[in-house]
Each structure stands twice: as C-alpha cells, then as structure tokens.
Image (cartoon, rainbow, N blue to C red; front, side, top):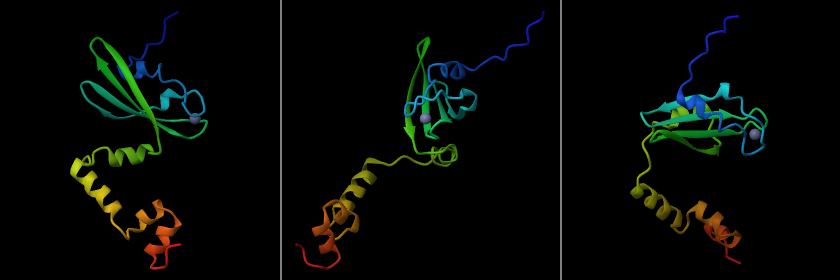
Length: 129
Ligand SMILES: [Zn+2]
C-alpha cells in the first residue's frame, strides 16, 4: 500500500519536538499552532500559545555548527503584539539611562510609589509622616 507523501519539515519545525510542554502548566503544546515571526540564516523565532493556560511562549531556534539549539521564555506578548513590536528599534543605553534618571527625579509620581506612602504624600504636596 503506498504511503501518503510525507511533508518535508523545516529544521525549526523539527526543533519543536524539544519544545513540547508549557513551562507554566506542563500542558503539551500543539506545535502545529507554532507561528513563525522571524527567520534569518542562523536563527528562527517562533511564538507558541498554550492551550492549557493561554500563556505565550517565544522560542529562538539557532543553528550551531551542524546542530541546533533553542532558547525560550514565557511572555505576555501575543503573536499580534510581536508582529507589531519586533521590528521597532531597540532601546539604546542612553535612552535606558535617561529613563532611569527620569524615574529618580524628586516629585516624580512613579518614584513616589516606589518609595512608600510618606514619599507619596510629599509628592501630593502633603506632609511626610
Ligand atoms: Zn500552560
């Protein structure tokens, strides 16, 4: 009896065999639902959604010599978020430092939250206790 033609798989699809369970709830991923969002010569970035807990997972599959490796993380980014954000320019070191300095400014409302209720009261113009 003739066998149905086997669909050839991309190397990143083979690697999905190693990314088989959600790290949050251990539900098996439906790897047929893995979505590719970036592919370069050496690396492939994939997005997976857990059917058990609906968490999102990003995996990077990288060619290392003749083999392959993978790295992944749970994220709160949906596939649509990633499609929108992954091409945005990265944050520079200067922008990061400027953001940090902005957060340290006295009277900054966000800064007041991180220093406790007395500082928050001062930021509102009240008296510190
Ligand atoms: Zn899960």
